Length: 481
Ligand SMILES: *Cc1c(COP(=O)(O)O)cnc(C)c1O
Image (cartoon, rainbow, N blue to C red; front, side, top):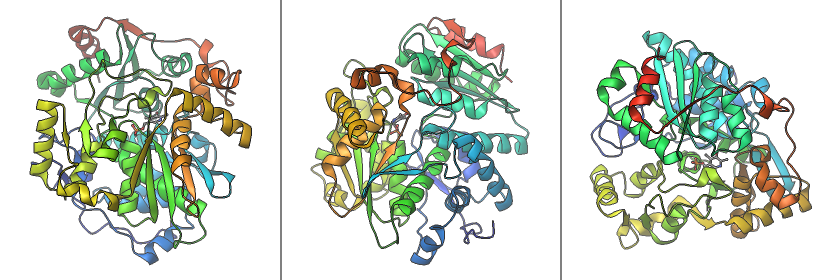
């Protein structure tokens, strides 16, 4: 890796909690965990800043070299050569379909699609999960430990986690999913895995039931410690770091020089993907706007228009045709608010007490809100009819079929596009995962990518259970590593 510029290795990288009661943690300390011990989220003490010469040196790097150059800025407790090897193994052309890993597809001059969905499960979550698989195996081996990953999924996260962890020594995955509620393709992706370290549990209930069971099991510290229960959910810090890389990749692919600005359109749910864009921008990548697209569940769009953050109840959370954005609250959002309130942990703790007590908070009337523009966020909402119309018009104009989530991003992005600023729309899944909506929009099925033919008719392996915490614990206890 001779082309890789100097990294931050050698200078200290430390992590703190957004609520102030954790400091001085290192990357490997926070890698396997979820929330910080005080209930806050883990963030770096400061963001690394790239100067013009450093940014210039990144422009010509291959994806794995670029990934190493970025990720190593956030890690100082894995030897550089080891980290470089882990990154190289995570980002192989065989796994992502091309050497570019996240290729840029130009629809027309100034309008691009950054293709993040060519990994094993055809959604952008593979980009982070594949690295997580390598990191977890490495750190567990080094520390002589094992881990039982427990998670709940409504579709994309569970399959990405299973494909990243399958066959890895020392790791088992117990993934809860709502029985009969995922798309047939998503179900087949997960349940057709025959690896001995993967356990699918279909819960007779909805996603929230699965989530509640995970919370109950993880909240039992005796059980959690005895069975070394871990998580790979969307607040995992390493997942965010891995996602920072493709903002750089997309920027370099869409521009000729680092004097140019671009904007990104990001279909958002738990605020993980677009928060990675925020980090890239804070590091000095010339991003003009981060355009956030919500679907019918518009918690985040409401915030960026008003300063008001109001979490929704289960009943208020709609099931939509872009299901991976169906959120009642955005689990990574606290990380951004930490920056917005000038990194004051007491203020963050106070705001999230208000979330607990009153269901939200309003920063719109505070001095903090006057600084919001400097972060470059804009937002909009995309509804079912917009989604369908966008899938149609993108097909008609460019001959490209996009998935419903990507369509939400494109729809909002095009409305807020500025002339002279290239727009990069993040493609977060392939249409094959959401056949029903594609049929509604186009009157025919999406193409199934090579290698995925017949997926739905493969033998499936899943335990179907009632939403019963004790039964799930018993299941795990009998099979944990
Ligand atoms: C997870 C997901 C999203 C939302 O991403 P966040 O990081 O939660 O904002 C959007 N689209 C697809 C296809 C997803 O799987």
